[in-house]
Image (tube, rainbow, N blue to C red; front, side, top):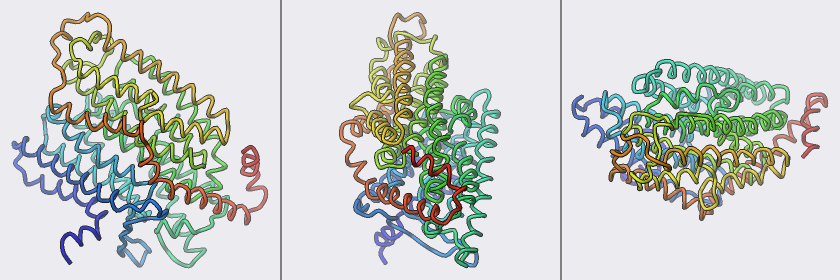
Amino acid sequence: MTGIALLDQHLLSVLIALPMIGAALLLFFPRGGNDAIRKFTLLVTTAEFLLSLAVVARFDVATAGMQLVERAPWLPQYGISYIVGVDGISLWILMLTTFIMPITILSTWSAVTKNVKEFMVFMLILETAMVGVFLATDLFLFYIFWELVLIPMYFLIGVWGGERRIYAAIKFFLYTFAGSVLMLVAIIVLYFHHHAVTGVYTMDLMKLYELTIPVTLQLWLFAAFFLAFAFKVPMFPFHTWLPDAHVEAPTAGSVILAAVLLKMGTYGFLRFAMALFPVAATDWTPLIAVLAVIGVLYGALVAMVQKDVKKLVAYSSVSHLGFVMLGLFAFNLQGIEGAILQMVNHGVSTGALFLIVGIIYERRHTRLISEFGGLAKVVPVFALCFMVVTLSSIGVPGTNGFVGEFLILLGAFKVQKWYAVVAATGVIFAAVYMLWMFQRVMFGKITNEENLRLTDMNGREVAYMLPLLLFILWIGIYPQPFLRRMDASVNAFVTRFEEKKQAALAGSPAGETMLVRYFDGKK
């Protein structure tokens, strides 16, 4: 078999393995060769992105199920296998991961100057873990990648972060790990329940999808998965670790945290919690929808009063991801497709905002809004990039943010009008806190002489911002190529969700399903 044929057959495995192989090779680089280390890491992450384009090229838009599936026995006596695949739900989140990594690496050229070798090793390990999360379709394999993500991010915050980096790193680890342990317990219960029903031990997600789970058990298992994913999103009121982690993390850490790690929570809800436990998901919908709407408003209002630009952007994530959760739990095509697209949009726009904050912090070593003013006159290219990203974050028509939020509100309105109406006010608040911040930083008189000596964006900074600006406008003007590749998988998800829910309800005592039927009646 030729090398090209082998690569074609094991494309997803290569995507998972390549960054880890790169990290292993970096260990042999001399510690002082920082320039070579940076260039090699950029080469690996760029190669990873180019390889991932082959996934898009080979993706069949008419196929609803998993594609490019690779399967190998791992611990067959325990029903554990190595199974990876991609569908319309995971495709664009995978692409977001591989797309944002070389941009992030390029942004570290002057920002990371100590222990560069170790930093790049952790970044590559992190990429392997993130890609693995979005491709794994065996629950045991998924959980390994899910937990592996914590280790490099813990060190990225704890070693290369700000003054309170140790506190932020420990808080990040403990909060997200606590929820993950409960999910592990739920996975084990699901594993034994499948054996009790079928006589077969398996962790294969596709086989677990076929299992009809009693309503009472669904409620408990969904609660465990809910906590794991709610901490990761993070939903209100599980969000308190996020501002500290964002503020103390280095710029690269903040970008990856916002662009990819938070999406692991929303993706987890869609792929696992909602798909496996449809009755429980429906039963929990009023609570989750209320928490999502509160998150939209709370994140926006708290962002409005922040004095630190980075902290403002951190709280804006709570608000944006509240929208994503609202779309997911609409359980319809518009809401779910809008939520998936908004995951990508948030990764592009908020990742770009953190890069913008990093650029100005490198020059002024402060993030306080009061320290700036009038920068548009001094750094016009920076001001232009900042303006486009700000409009994207607000969700102005013609930018990516508008498309995602519109579809989410459309889906939510079909289910419960008041959720959509109240959540829509979050868009107004977003305009307030983003435009007010932009006005104070970029316009007005220059009151601080240090701002007169600022240099505009250099070629490297323009190079990593341009792709982000391109996607902000592309998705905003013509989102069809992105939505078309979701259609089959999301339609199949909605159909399977209803079928599984009805099957579970048919075999359950009336008392167990009273709330479910009540809320279905509301719809």
